Image (cartoon, rainbow, N blue to C red):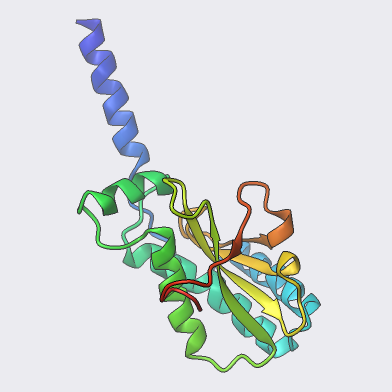
Length: 177
């Protein structure tokens, strides 16, 4: 009898931990700090300050909005399962890249280039991101914009500093930015 309760409790806890994430928009104090930090890193790439502010704000706020529109659940790997099993329509890492890229292309950023980054291509743990480069920035110095990794809370770091993934530019196919 105790095993039935233990199994029930385990399943209940698992399902409770995978509830939908709903972020308050436009942004919180934590987001303001993140926007400021990302802006500084974008300026360091050679970006114009006003463009860096616009891009940083867009990336942080739109990542949260996408998470809401996808009815994202955490952890992101579980959400992938929901998408792949037909329970959700969108929310895979490349969906974040596609949808964030649409927003970026609606603006006319002159001091940045945008590339599609991929790690572990064609493997079960493939991961896709947007990489922001200055006009003369080498790939390793580019900044990763990863809205999937933390379930809609934008993760960013330099390509060379990512401890979880080793990204390269994705050039083949129609997914190139």
